[in-house]
Length: 580
Image (cartoon, rainbow, N blue to C red):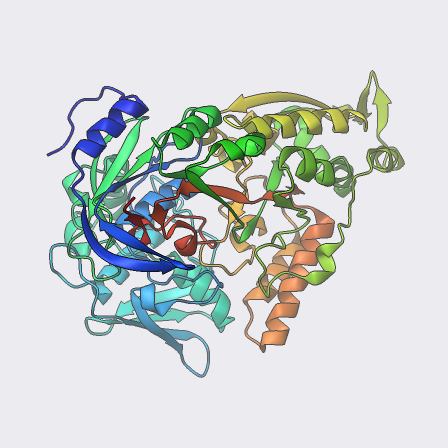
């Protein structure tokens, strides 16, 4: 039975309806320290979505403008990726559709061996044909004439490096690429983009991929459509009320770790204070604590509070496109201007005052926490520490002169609008601090807040409408998903996520170097060279990377243990309630 009413329920009313339908039965005991807890079969976990974010795309291949952690998290409730990584940033074939991936001696052919244990919820096996069909969608959505653009264009060499993807029997897929590549990079960032869709359900227009893409787009945000009934992930979509909640129930045919919970609900949060109140009263079982409320965490007496860092980095995007308003794109193309802007970012103060110590200094394309071998230790020292006076002097040395309080050169003013994501006190405070500190350098900033879903819609395609954006909402910027932190999609001249239109031949070459095969030492050194170049050349402006302060009910277990630091997503099928 589905709720058909579109009326928005209050948190307390929703909780009463949820709990009325929960049936619990004791099933096992779990040791925790010196005590043993009795697990309870069933129960409903209510999870807070990131403030002012709603899911907008449920099809397993996201479009460029819907590539958010929120959409990824809810998609992964229903669909399994070809490969996953564990909390130590290692390939985890036990949780992957792929049982193994091998390469030939030349390094240009990858053979994917699917694990035959995985099935769709209608009983049909997940096969090589599903993988090939999914690749065909990815490829079609990367064409210039496509009705929507696949988010992964430019990542993992897709689509230009990929020559063919073919099925060899029901459980083997052969991927041919045009030249040898670093296997760690290609498996994670290339093959890791594949989240198969069931061909038997979605292949509506086998001879017209544009119609197929239009069909997908027409129902991608309609999760109750029958096309979403066939899944291979741990949950089925159940029902929703727009801008209120999205609920899931266990997939009884799931071949992985079965959910102990009887229902999972993702709840929309209009503000951080409302989320805090819901966590405090128990209306929410899991969520996150914004930095502005860290001082009040002692009030969460029924909850556990844990900081978790994700594999990624945090940044602000200056629009370097020639079509940016007021000629500001030309100004941002100047390294001296970007250096001055970076010198005007007081990272120590931001970490201390806004994040209460739960953040790390970030000066390149990978933050130092969580620890991974990919972070260049030489970048523990920020190449552009906070020094607005030095930044102002640098601008003057490069021909900028202050006129009526604003640095000006050749008729172009360092005066622009910073658009930032609403919904976070710390995010607003950060924007205000940037405005004030940049003013010391003669840089005048106007602040405009927009909902997150609007902020991420800005990019190269509408470059004339924006100058600078910050979407982090104090929960971090970019996460690497399958975990190999190369920058092709982000900072190559043709990257699909290169929102600021940054372009550098040397950057392109360094990124290309991270793709090349070699020894572990060689591939790491190439990664370090890329990170070092980014730290000094500033394709974007780097800001502190905050921890996600995860909060969950004390009687809800497995939340932190199963948290995915690569994708920054929860895995509720590993959670369980204990009885009181």
